[in-house]
Structure formats: structure tokens, C-alpha cells
Image (cartoon, rainbow, N blue to C red):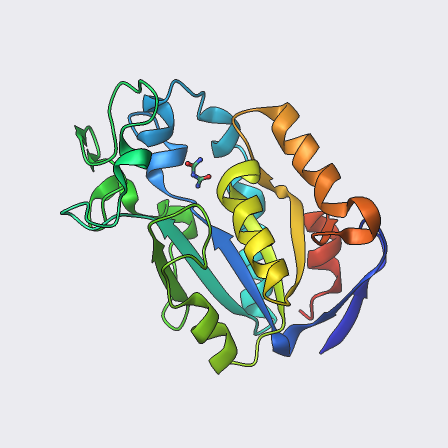
Amino acid sequence: MNTTLAQARPFPYALDLARAALVVIDMQRDFIEAGGFGASLGNDVTRLQAIVPTVLAVLQAWRRAGGWVVHTREAHRPDLADCPPAKRLRGRPALRIGDRGPMGRLLVAGEPGAEIVPALAPLAGELVIDKPGKGGFHATPLQAELARRGIAQLVLMGVTTEVCVQTTMREANDRGYDCLLVEDGTESYFPEFKAATLAMITAQGAIVGWTAGAAELISVLPR
Ligand code: C5J
């Protein structure tokens, strides 16, 4: 199915659903719920919680249309061998990656906090990528999995806009994917960083990619 998001920024985005993947970045309890990694850094997680219904609406419409879905999780091995000290020791958080919090060890695969929030839980047939970095492509099988399915376009949602979402979008851009970020399907702990990210992505003739609202994306998907 080919369609066009006429209102996309900075100009219309031609979507080929058969060659596109919906990539949902790091909608994990550790970023979105109290007691997780995001909160340990001093952030207000309610901003991120607020987008869950929009992300769910797009996910459901995409699934109904027969589109393929990828979920990422920022999650380290229990021995933290894939977590460089430069990442773990940075800053002065209340708890560090690997420390035990109310939802288990922070950002460690298999712990409750590293799971995707229940409302957005992956379904059978959807790909789940555990990534040790900010970008979804770094040290993961994501590129190989996309190539195996002939994917050429990525539609992105998730958190946080300027960290893992933007990094993944830039990695994808350099690998030749046409990327579209769903504006109200992404959020940051810092509203000004989200606004700046959306602006820099679409500047200079879509130098990184396109953005569009969830309602427009849902409206062009087959029901
Ligand atoms: C962060 C992310 N903020 N998922 N991770 O460290 O954006």
C-alpha cells in the first residue's frame, strides 16, 4: 500500500507500508514510571506517561493495517559487560545503571523496569531489540533484521526525543532509510529539547527526515 502524508514537515512523505517498519523506541517502565532510571536522574516522568495513549493509537492502527513493528529497549546484560564505565559513572544520579531500585536493577535486561509498559507490550511476530547504546543500530542486529525484510522506511515514536529517538533516527538516516518521526508520539523530559529536535530534523530540506502528527498517520492507514 502506497499513500502520502500531505501535511508532513517539511514536505509530503510518501509511505510504502509494505517496505516500512514502525519503530517504537524505549517505551520502558524505567523511563516512564516513578522509581525508574529516568526518575533517578531527577526527571519528571509524567510528561512521558502522557504520550502512551497516542503511541498506542498509532500502534493499533499500524497493526490493523498489517504493518510490521519493531520495539527497542535500552537494556544491558546483567554483568554490565556492554555498559561502558563512561556511561555508568557519568553524573550524580540517585541510582546508577545496574543498581537495584523499586523495579529491579536499572536498565538491566530481564528486570521489571526494563520491560515495555504493559499498554504497549509487543505482540507475537514483532521484533524486540535490546540495545546497549542510545541508537537502535549500535551493537544490535537491527540493520540485518530490516534488510532481511526489505525495509526502506522507518516511522519512529518513543522516548526520549533528543536522546534515543534522535540518535536512532540519525543512525538510520546515515544507513539510507527514509525516516518519519511522529510528533505527538515522542516526548522528552525537556519540552524545549523536543521542540529543537523536531526543528533540526526537518531543517535544510529534511536533513534527517520528516515529522507528522499521529492523527494524520492514522488517517492514511488502511482500516
Ligand atoms: C536516555 C533514552 N534518555 N531512551 N535514553 O538515556 O532516550
